[in-house]
Length: 113
Length: 277
Image 1: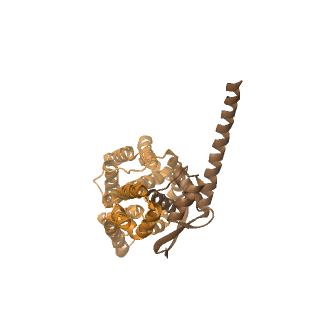
Image 2: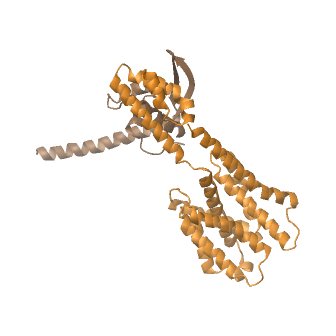
């Protein structure tokens, strides 16, 4: 079931990390860090809590376990529902940004006049 | 002590089931994320312990066997209130003259509305008041039919009063009053206590079976309905009439509830065992 709720920042960037294709846990941590320009630093505990929740909500799916560099990995992939949720959240953030930006510009003009 | 050893100790904060399914990859992610930094490693370990304790708390907050049974009884009470309301909604003038009066109908409707919206204690009090009123109206010696009509709902309503559901209250669910009334009007033509009124169970029972592994509460409610239908059958026998469904189906109706209860209990035990260290 898709969570019809606002995504929190770590969840948003963790899901966004999967836009280009499936990634394993540590790759998600790195990609989320890049996308957020270093503002989101997911810890392992936080990452797996939000991955479990996203799986329960049908936003992502977990692949089979495999070994890479002597360490066990599992890739996670975005579902179409997850992509939809990400798009909805992106639109919401963009809309909020436009509205607040417009007010800031309007009040700045008034303040400098 | 190596980083991996410390990570494995911190991982024990998680429920066993989660450790078995995700533990190794979590260790791998933690070691990669820690790198050579001792500070980052300590932060990762603390995050893992907090995450594990949260996961355990979340599992514990999920319903146990007693909560499942209580919720099942509450669902059954709601269903029985709906059935009684549908029955009354469908009663034509032949019956209306001697048993439908305004305020008992208001009590029953109020109980159903409260139960649908999630106000269990109010629903239970109104439902119990409706049953007591029905008892008070009995002028002839109590028949077997009356016993069947009230014992199971009484138990369900008392459970609703003592152990109400811990679910969010939603007034939007009052919209269910419309199909319940419509169904009662359509199906109630056959008269009070018609088995036609139980036809929605043909949809609900397969749903309850499909959901049983994940959530046995609906199955428990259905089993109680089966028990009540069995009580109707028994009432016929008490009143000196032959069993309408026959002996074997009646035995099956009575046998459903203990089997469902035992399976639900067993399933909850398995789940609890999985969650222990």
